[in-house]
Amino acid sequence: MSFSQGEPGAICVFSACGLISKATLRRPNSSGGTVTYEGRYEILSLSGSLMPADNGGSRAGCIVVSLADPDGRVLGGGMAGLLVAETPVQVVLGSFLPGNHKERPP
Image (cartoon, rainbow, N blue to C red; front, top):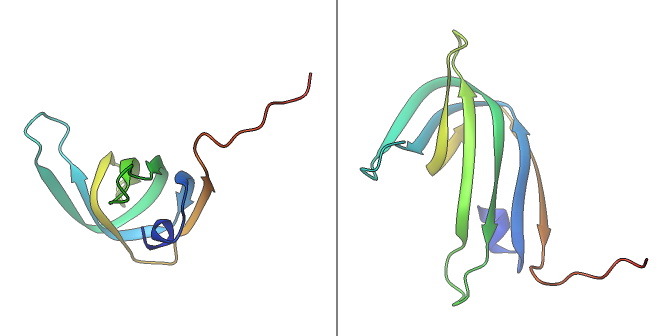
């Protein structure tokens, strides 16, 4: 998130790997609540995008994560808070300016 604050364009998260110790995710039902998982979890997948807000405020978008606990059980969902790293975490992302594209020559 701190990286995205210095970027004028959109941010796309392509993947990540590493271990985390805490994750806060949105509940999959319509209540709008969150659930926090604490323990040792491996990141299986991390992807999504954050687009700049029209009014210059915070970014809009969604980042989703899939995690595995030490027993191999998989959980995941939309991020509702920070992921807290337990080990170094590598994240592959890109940034681009929306609507700033060039036509490919025929």
